[in-house]
Image 1 (spheres, one colour):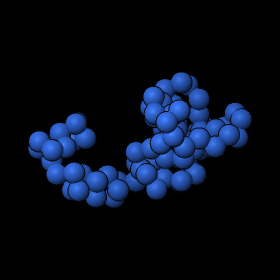
Image 2 (cartoon, one colour):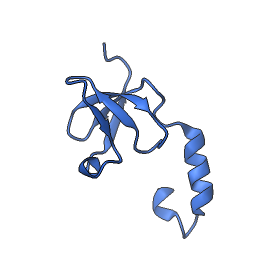
Image 3 (tube, rainbow, N blue to C red):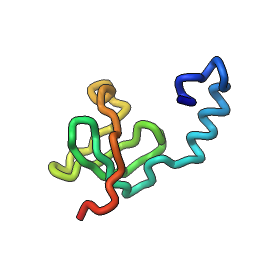
Length: 81
């Protein structure tokens, strides 16, 4: 909701600073993607689109890559072992 109101109700720089402080997906978080794959966050420099290592294949995926822009993080998984 906040992201959709940037420019109208919220200033971009303030929202960016707010999101950076949240650390939505800390390093080593296990996340599930919209394509049902699961991965571990290995870099969260971009907190909304982290770099993840896929659990099933070990492939590293940067969610900012053009090929991954349609993927969404649908959840955080507590126990993945």
